Length: 566
Image 1 (cartoon, one colour):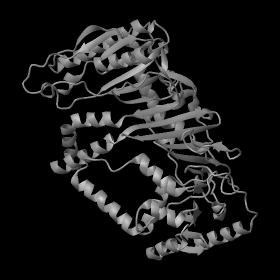
Image 2 (spheres, helix red, strand yellow):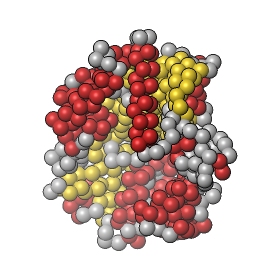
Image 3 (cartoon, helix red, strand yellow):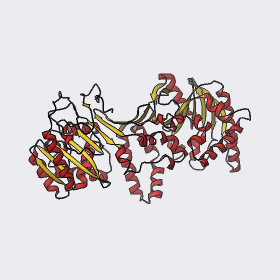
Image 4 (tube, rainbow, N blue to C red):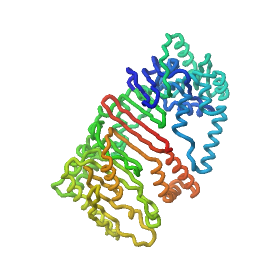
């Protein structure tokens, strides 16, 4: 967030918390019952649980000015206004341990929870209320390139906090000061905290803002300071696909001075990361289809597994590959275009006539395999993949039809060389759209059909869109959703997953998945089955997961929304 203005953080259903500034001069809207997160066990467990409660190393305001005790050169600072309530809200949002976990996994989880409760002397929420009931500030300082964690607790029960850290031993150093407990890993860090806290007490006290009725986490990471000690992922180390997917995001890091973080917890978890660097100010701006602006996309149907939309322009990439790719990757693109341009004859350009007739970006939607008799199809039921785009020029339809027919002819020629029967191309139409469908030959045995029996490559036009899908059912279902509810307006990049539907798809294909794990990991059949039992239960527990990236001229915002299946 912008350090020069006060920003409302929580939604209307939540109570408002405002944050302003960096490591000093902060103002928060929560007072009274505020708590923090510290935890038990050895040193690593302590800092791990502190980090989990805070969300991420970040910077914000402490309700009682606790962050003023942290040194100004901290590369990351965080404050939690009401940590105890944050723990309670996290528990409500995440929910209980999912039912159906394998007994061995359930036993490990139960043992771990029992260990934590024993070390904390009760529930995590009760512990947090005792040792940091009035606030928390957390910082990370770099010394000789190594991170030094620092923690300031406004304890509701200072004696309990001191006793807890004394049980940990010499690995963590602490020092009480009335109701404040200073905590650090090395002695030097404790000296820094002590000096900062004494200086903050002598400073002019800040007026207390009105109470805000909810808990949240806010903060900042100093990216410019980290740049000297952290090796950022490099765009040059990516292949062509990686550059298309991630380059606009990775290019933001070297251009950013800081990263602001907000964690909101209500019925869902919402994590927001904002940095002041913009991909629109880099050379990758030319790779964005809409440059961060609004555009339409098909809705994700009720039976869809996931949907991915990226603000990328394949047309721009194919027109000037040398602008974005390496020399060898550019040659590969040029070789592809020399073949693609010949598919529909010399008078047709793949880039200008085919790609130029579409409204980018292209959207990927994945469906579960259609229901059917499991004994009459391949053991591996492939999901349906559908690529869709709006139609900018109706003249693209005959071009794509001819290209589809030529490609099918080429594929059938290769199948004939392998003594395989050809795919049969037929006209496909429904109330939602019309086009072409290539159907596999009828399987007559012996045994169950091969994987390709579940494919029916389809090209459909309808509802102002074109859909290229691995099955006719996937293409028709996407056009049906467009007809029923129309396109949605979106910005930037967006990935949405639905856990229960993905879990059902994994369950249907679990036998091949178990075999693949046995071969890849060398596990026994029992171990592979246990792994997928646990994975399917955990995936099913995720009601919805959404990841977004919004590109603007003044910065880039990443968002993550996690909703538990109820």
